[in-house]
Image (cartoon, rainbow, N blue to C red; front, side, top):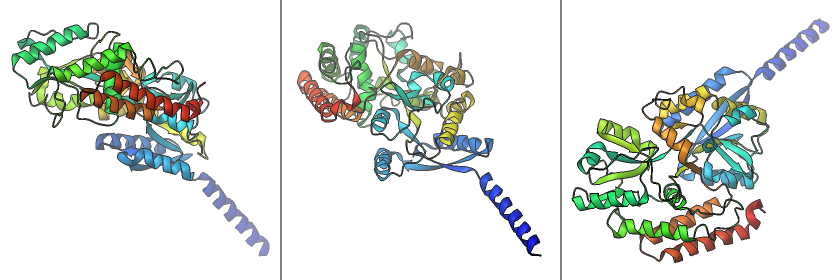
Length: 418
């Protein structure tokens, strides 16, 4: 009897151990809480991953976007980061420099990484630390009826508006009396919009926020001749009455008060619904060195403290499959970050109704400076832009931004750059 009991007990324990081993490993993930369409698409992708295999189960927690970066920083200090987290691409180098992220080379298949466009990767010192499924593209929006009435040609991918042509267009529209302001560049928006929206104008003039060869200095880039010319042009938009410096909202274009709106591809759904076939989407301006648009949206990364990086990498790899990127694009209208995924979508495939945004991103996108100093670059640049628009001396405003940026870099021993 005793022998039977021991045998039965051993059998039961073996069965329980096997059952325990069969339980999937939980992978904790954080993502920012955003619009319902994107969240629904993300949750559906997570469910597909969990259903596709039995080794891992991803459990995601939504964090309010306004507190997201602070939440990550606090969790990193406390050693409580999840295995997988999404991040706005510009802050990725700062998190990587702080030691919070694991490089993705070696964790993800290189062929999978290679098929993602540069706009879908976040890097620091030549290593990739984040990957994203989507991006957005800046464009000029107007009405065909406005172009026809005022004898203005439609700008194209091959022939965007030059600075001289666009200044003439704005003067013509202003003189017509049909609009309170001919142009809207969203000067009432705050935060990251200044760097995302206005640094591309600076770069099209030939300047930049920092020397990207060294990432150690802004002198000569943010306050050189090209930057000063950019600042004077930005200020002229206010002094000539082409833009409303104190716009109460960003609805001037839709309500007919504004002729041309500089905005992102995120607006096309609303604009198409209200304007139909009258809506015209055009590439942004060539201010001397070709059109430039901002790039880099929310990406996924793996924390350096993750106890199961293999499982985390399997989840991120799953999200980078063309079918998954395409599913996100179809659900949200965001631009897919791989050509293979674009070919599977309704809007971004060749001949699709929104293909122009994919083309703009492929041809004109420039990633924001991939340096841990970026948060300081962005805030200093925003102050300089506001000062210039408000009438402060252009060079004084730019010099002040350069001083703050370079002091921060010195205080942090170059952030690892030599």
